[in-house]
Amino acid sequence: MLDDITLREVFHFRVSWLGAVSVITISLLALIVLLSVLIVYTPIRNILPGYSASLRQQLIEESARVDSLQNSLTVQRQYLDVIKQLTAGDIRSDSVQSLDSLQRVEQARIIEEGRNEVTEAFMAQYEQKERDRLLLFDVPTNQSLQQLYRPVRGAIVQPARPDLHIYATTIATTKNESVLAVMRGQIVLVQRAEDNTFTIALQHNQYLTIYRHVTKALKTQGTQVEAGEAIGVMESDQSLELEFWDGGKFVNVEEVIAW
Image (cartoon, rainbow, N blue to C red; front, side, top):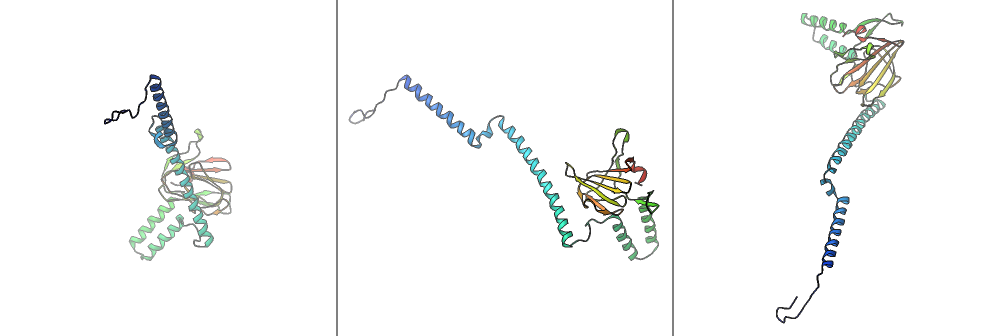
């Protein structure tokens, strides 16, 4: 490099093949190290082929896990709220009314409206409809007859098949419908299943009824319940499965309960 005025040499350097190769090699090594650091320690690795797919799968799994934990926390929070209300005396019994309570309220409302031909006809039709929902069944107790309630109002969508070792009868339900005890007894099991639903078993002397896929349990193990009393709630449209056993022998619920 020369000064354009005095033509004196200002700076010079010699370029050789070995020097050029060395400079290029060092530059490439530095570039590789820099890219490696960026890929390992920065989010730029997400744009690499193959990595985004595994990251997406990981995000889906984590989202499903968070969803499951949130559902479990919601169920536990609702359970604790009911316990707090019962402890504080804010509620005397379950907030979900049983079928017989709803029947008495409806009858009282009709009676208050006054007796006339229309009311009498409606009352007769209503009582006949309710009687059709019950079945008289012999049990070895002090009373010779016992009323069996339908656990839910839905229709049977899949009957039991003992020949295929399927002992549960699947019954359709509606959202927020109460699950009723078919007869008086004691709750001997309240167990949470893997799908966050409950399995509830009631002992009625020699008889045993099992309710599966109940989304919310209203009673605890050891509680005595009356016939028609709410023991759970179907908070979704999931079907209820019901089993009826007599001293360890299968009983078809379609034969002992009027649907």
